[in-house]
Image (cartoon, rainbow, N blue to C red; front, top):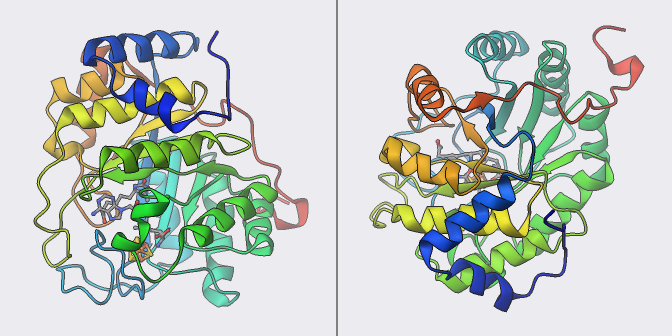
Length: 333
Ligand code: SAM
Ligand code: DTB
Ligand code: SF4
């Protein structure tokens, strides 16, 4: 049984990443098959609850106000809109809804109160609820946890060394602090990154080291391939080779054997064969539904046909246990 370690060195991770490709895939598949539910794939649906107009300068992001992209700014959705979208995602087979807001950070205001109501409403549909709202204090994380939030997504995106090239409006430490705050509130953590930003392989290894050396590995690690968007500084980045994606997924699988590794953004550019290699290399989650936050994603029925063909099964919600909802906060109370 692969041991869960938190002391991986860059040399070890780099050695794994650079193994001959088929050896690497074989090893990752072997580690993955030690998990009894290896044929199950967790399906998350994304919903952009507040779109565009973000004050941050993340070079990849179509939602940053300072870049001129085709994204239309949309104010925070109503709880009813979110509940309807969540029900639709559930009917389509998603067990988790991830609500994203184009915010730098959470503020203690009425918008946050509304997000708390959204979390309660989606939780009462018996779906795992995830949020990605930017930076978060410990107290805010606790409020989300009390409302029944299952996971908090906060990506590292790249290495600490490379971070300043991509984002100048916050630091890597800010990112780590938020992840710590989510942990203190006993939320499960979803944190990963993007490849294809123009980073080096060393940067990728360095980011994987930070993730795999956390005292507790993130329960999910999304690996995104950059979706280049017109108007952003990274619009002309070349497409990331599929084998880089496979190497990232396989390396993450080997060094974090119990973590759910998500084949995230970039699937519209991947063939079925490309994706099959990612699943073989240990990916066991996807974002499904026609849209990511603002960019397209494969159609749900195409994904279901792919599952059928590859012999994969959607994972049911709450397989690893339910969050503790504070009684007075429960909509059922
Ligand atoms: N504003 C919050 C934040 O930055 O934490 C939450 C939403 S933000 C859009 C969530 C994540 O989406 C980013 O951290 C990044 O990893 C990913 N992302 C954004 N634009 C992307 C793109 N063009 N291609 C791939 N991933 C992207
Ligand atoms: C993650 O790692 N990828 C998702 C989710 N977490 C929030 C977002 C991908 C966004 C891709 C660009 C867009 O659709 O705006
Ligand atoms: Fe804003 Fe998040 Fe996009 Fe950065 S990634 S610009 S913080 S929405």
